Image (cartoon, rainbow, N blue to C red; front, side, top):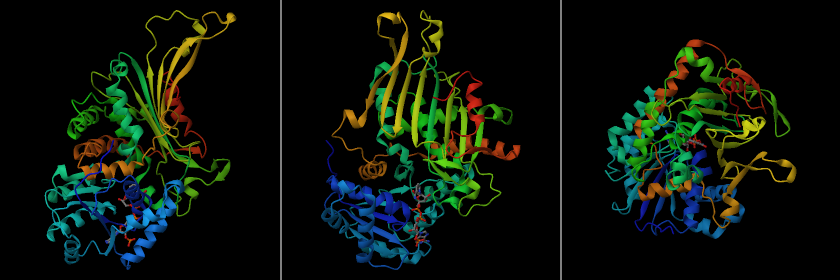
Length: 488
Ligand code: NDP
C-alpha cells in the first residue's frame, strides 16, 4: 500500500516546455495525481523562456496530457484540477537577476523544494549558481538532473564539480530512467529475495551473461544530437552499464541508497580495461545502411534528414565485458545495443553452466544449460528454461527444453506498471536516492567507456555497416561465435 507523502512540495521545473517535460514529466505528475499521491498544496512552477502566461501554458499542457496519457487513463476533469497546481514563469536561465522572482512564487519556505533541470546539461551549473545567488535553495533542496552527465570523464567532472559547488551529493538525484523501470528494480528482488538464485549467482554456476537492448527505430529526427554522442555514450555508458551492475553486484547489506550504490561502484571499478590489442575480439561497432523496418524501406544513417555524409558515429555496439573479481572471473558479459534492429527488445539472459556429468543423448548436449531470461520489454517477465523428458512411449530419455514462465501482465493482471518517470519523481519526493546515480558511478562508467572510444579514434577504422532491419554487423556474431557461443 503506497501512502501519499504529507509534506507539501514545491517543484520548480526548468525547461518545462521542452520535449522531456511535456512527453514524460507532466504525464508522470498527472499519474501521481491520479494515484492520489500528491500532497494537498503541492505545486509546480513551470519555467521556460517562451513568452506565455499561466493560462496558455495550462491549456498547452492539457493538450499534451491528452496526447501522451493513455486514453483509458486520461480524465479531463482530473487533468484540469491537476493543472491548477501549475504556474508558469518566464525566465532566461542566463539572467541571474531574474531568479529572485522564484522566491516570490514560494508562499511557504518550509515546503519541500525540488528543482528539476530538464534542460541541456550545459545549463546545470548556471541554474545552480543563479539559484544560490538568489537564495532560492537550502541544504534540504533536492535537485534532479538528466543525462547525459558530460560526453566523457573530463566533461562529466566539470558538470559534477559545478553542481557540487552548490549542492551536497545527498541533494543530487541524477536520472538514469532505466533504474525507474519496474522490471529493472525487479532484478534486485529476483536476486536478493530468492535464495534459489542467490546461491547460484557466480562463476561456479554461470557460464556467461547476455544483455541486449535493441531499438527498431532509427534517429527519429534527432540526428544532430545523436551524432555527437553515438550509441556507446547514449546507451552503454549509462543504461547498459547500470543493468550490468545490477546483475553483477554483490548483495548490499540493506536497501539504502549508498549500500546499493557502493556495490555497483565496486563492479564498475572491477571492469577489465579493453586495451587496443583486445579491440578486434572484444568490441564491434556498426552503422546502419538502408534496409527495412516493419516491412517498410528505410534510409541508412547517412541518408537520414540532416545527416553529415562523412559521419563515423556508431549506431550499434556489441562488446564483451569482463569483471575482474572473485565472483565473475572467467564469465563474459556480452552486451549489444543498436538502432534499426529487427525489433524493440530489452532482455538479459543468464546462461548457467551444464551439470557436471552428462548422461543423456550426446546429440542433445547443446541443450544442457539452463537459461534465465529476464525480459525488460516488451511483455515484461521472466522465463527459466529447464530441461524435461520429452513425453511419449517412443521418446526414451530424450530431453526437451521448456520455460517456467512468468509474464507480469498475465500473472498480476490488476497491477498497472508505472512509467519510469512516475517512480523516479515519486522517489525524489520521498527523498530516496537509491534509484539515482551517484557521482562516482557516473565517473567510473565514463572511465571505462572513454578508453574504448579512445581506441576507436586511435585505430581510425570506420564502423562496420549493417542493413537496417538486421541484428547488426556480422562481426558481432563472429565475436560471440569465437567463444563457442551464440546470441540467444
Ligand atoms: P528540449 O531542448 O526539448 O528542452 C529544453 C528546455 O530548456 C526548453 O524548454 C528550452 O526553452 C529550455 N531552455 C534552454 N536554455 C534555456 C535558457 N537559457 N533559458 C530558459 N530556458 C532555456 O530538451 P529535452 O526536453 O529533450 O531534454 C532536456 C534534458 O533531458 C536534456 O538534458 C536531455 O539530454 C535530457 N533527456 C531528454 C530525453 C528526451 O526524451 N527528450 C531523454 C533523456 C534525457 P526553449 O524552448 O525556449 O528553447
